[in-house]
Length: 265
Image (cartoon, rainbow, N blue to C red; front, side, top):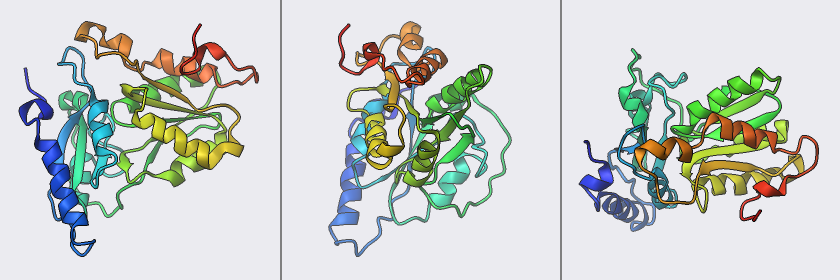
């Protein structure tokens, strides 16, 4: 069974962060990093080794590197695939950590390897809607898309935003959508406690508080050790869990305290 990056080189990521910090910070910004991008894997496919991807994100999102995360499909619909995205960033001033969803390894599709001039840090609206904003990244994007399709059958329009890049973060796209819908659900595979989803929720509530009709809800992995492969489907966000979160967005203005984070039944 293939080993993950952290298992093969347990100190590689720490070394990357140290080198990047020295290149960017020591000369007081006089030099550009000039470090090639590093591709690593994100998320856990069915029947693979249990590796909590959230731990890696939390270690990198506050480091002086760019964290770029693609969604689940070989062609991302805007820039011709994740390989093209890497080519578009290869001459940037900062080091890049490119995280590939593991499920992508089994996907095949013909794409055009063209160079992209689009700047880093732009989210993509994968599906338009007027009722609720779903914010997701990496392997959680297809789950959000499936949930939006299921909700549409019930007459609820969900807008799906694929962040694509965590650092820099596309505040404009996310906030514009939330201010229009007034409700938001953040979907991530990592555990909920102190995960990157909490940063997203904080940014939304700081910038869109007076536009919100309900609290922002997270759908995340449970705060437990990562389960064995046979049980991971119960741990990771699912379409049903996303739809349950949408139903709890106080459309009737009556909050359900059973689902508040930290609440006890």
